[in-house]
Image (cartoon, rainbow, N blue to C red; front, side, top):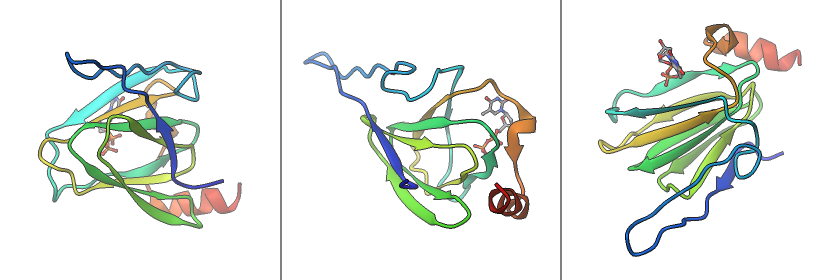
Length: 134
Ligand code: TYD
């Protein structure tokens, strides 16, 4: 399976502006339990640097741009998020890093689980041990 998996959203806009609808088990490939968004990031302050045991997410850059690095322990790939019509599916046990935020970046994330700190793997060596033994 590809490490970088995109989810496309059809713009439903008209002359009044753009509209995007996200629906669990329809264009989002899981039931949505949580939505959060990030704004006010800085180009020189990358974020993420963790994986999740069970959580699946789709990240959508609704405004601006950022660079996402995904790493499954075997492959490490980078992709630019700069369109509200193309989300990035981030599976469980995938290390993610977010870099190079534009000043206007707003990153919307839909998640398959409620927030749970015990689901995080924050140490890269622990992550590698975990994926090697899966
Ligand atoms: P974190 O996931 O560490 O952010 P990032 O990976 O983007 O750097 O979250 C930052 C803080 O926000 C951390 O203290 C946990 C908290 N948080 C919640 O309380 N609820 C949430 O849904 C999320 C995503 C984070």
